[in-house]
Length: 270
Image 1: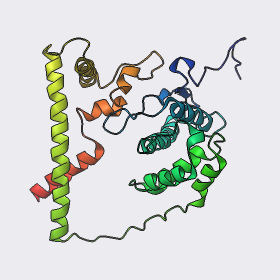
Image 2 (image 1 turned 60 degrees about the vertical axis):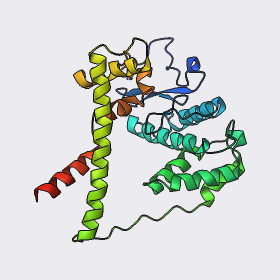
Image 3 (image 1 turned 60 degrees about the horizontal axis):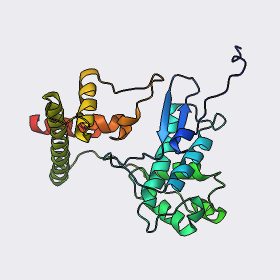
Image 4 (image 1 turned 180 degrees about the horizontal axis):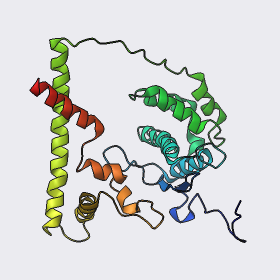
C-alpha cells in the first residue's frame, strides 16, 4: 500500500475560514467532495434559513462527527442524507421564539416539538430515523433532551392497498392536482427563462443579484454544469441560490412535475 509523503496531513474538515460553520466531506473512494455550509442552509425555495451562529457551529460539529471516516458514511449520498437531518433541525428552530442560541439551550420540549415537526413530512419515518441517527451520540445536547428522541415511537410503515382502478371522482381530483402542478412548473420556468433572456440581452446591471443569477442560469443552460472549484466542488455563489437543484429548478422540471406532465398528456390522449 502506498504511504502518503512525509509531513502529509489530512485536509481540515471543519473549515476555520468559515467561522467553523462549513465542513469538507470527501467520499471514501476519493472521487466526490463537497463543502457543506451550515451558515448557508436554504429551504426548498432557495431562501436562507437564518439561525444563530452558535447553532450553525453546533450542526457543523455534529455533522463532522456523523460523517467521520469511522462513521460508515462512505458516499456523498450518505453525507447528503445526514445534512438533510441538520436542515430539518434548522427549519424547526426558526419556528421558535426565541430561537435557542446553541445546543445547551435546547430543552426536552423543543426536542418533542422537533419530533412532531419532522413527523409531519411526507417520508416521516425516514426523517425521524435520520434525526435519531444525527443526534444519537451528541454529547453537546443535554442528556434529558436527547432522551426524548428515543422515548417516542416511530410510526409504522404504511401498508399500500392495491388500487385496481380510480373512480371518475377520484380521477377528477387527481387531474385537478396535476393541472395545478403543471401550471406552477410552467410559471416558475417561464420566470427563469425571462431572467435568462434579460441577462443575455445585457439588460441586467453588473453586480446586482439578478445579474449574478442570470450568469449562473446562462452557464447552466449552455453547458449543463455550474461553476466549480478545482476540486470539483460547486462554488459558493451557487449555494446562495439553493445549489445546483435551486438553479436547475428555475429552468427544468422536477421528476414529480415530469410525471404530472405525463399523466396530463395521457389523460388528454386516451
